[in-house]
Image (cartoon, rainbow, N blue to C red; front, side, top):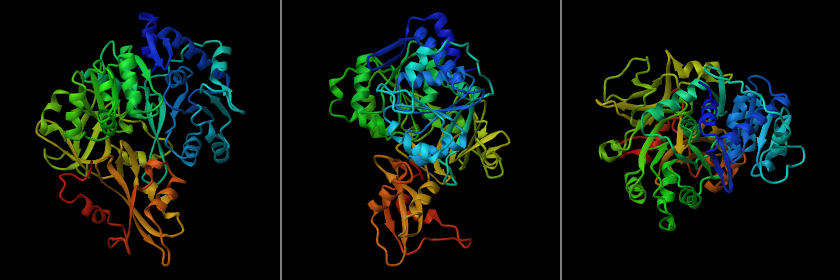
Length: 515
């Protein structure tokens, strides 16, 4: 199995059908294949060798789609960069992955001086925007125009397909290594469920294309020869316009995005009757939002996908019919066709149904490991099982319910935030003596990043000052939205901060410790 397989099949069967739609620009499968073959050739000409990492920092576009195909075509490895990260975080990931070639669009070209300063190994930058190429960069279109096409390397199977950086429990991002088999196993299983896309689909990329969730939908669309419609970034009106203009049938959104779309005052102005399937993930959807969404999109079936980057990323699915059962709306669904799921105790033994333990998965979708992190890999992958760090239970019918997090992680607006990263940033403020970061319930974001801070004697600080300070070191979505100030943090006899004590006043009375 290999990522470019669907492109070859579509060129053989439907070469003149539309593959990509981005604004006024439309390209067929045949045109796309030609451009991909030339872009791969250009990358090889720039010194990209077998297994080298090629990074991309850009908003959604048809060129992002071509990058996802051209890099494996050139026998290289994808490294999609998180567009919400700070320059320091991006530079760390480029350095850690030893990426020497970066594609960047107009939206992020202004970051280049900071990236060059922080990472001396960035030797080649390809400008893939629509404006003029900045000084010191190569033009994406010029490279394609001047290159001779090459044959597809057909990089495949257990060979590394991409590095997908996530937050880290130690405060530093870690690269999740996913193979072609990992990504396509997840895509095949998702399609086999009958809940995710169908032949003839027109899929809207509204979620960021660097993210494993949208990449999974991209892979499913590639299998089915679907048309890819892109908008640069999520915006409620842009979503509605794209659906109405291009007769979009499928999309993937996180619950907060669904809420913003269905509650938008202009919703009734757009024809959205073409929508057939909406997949969401990262958190369960509030019942009130689901009811509004089902009314707003009566032709659309809703499916929840649960998983993580390390699982490429889908491991359970809650399908459309199950969404009509109120008792299951808090469930993450049952094991997807490609996945085996168990609830295990700390010793790796399976727990009885209804007993809370760690949600673990195995199958062809489980990652190869963490890039250059053997200890963390060994901790996550035990006896063939990927340990999610999520606490949950399974009922008698195999439905999984997430109730807590074993890892010190917060999910806010569909993004994973590791407390250690935020604590490292907050602690660097000269007025901070100690801090702890927790997730607290939030109606809009699901969970809100909240800092509990002990100040140095004689110093004062506001929550907003803490947030602005943190944003100079980490991505804005990771920075604390709120803060409280205490005289001391609760600690155990071993000196470990008791975060459950800090969380209790916010979560007491709820049926679970996560949203």
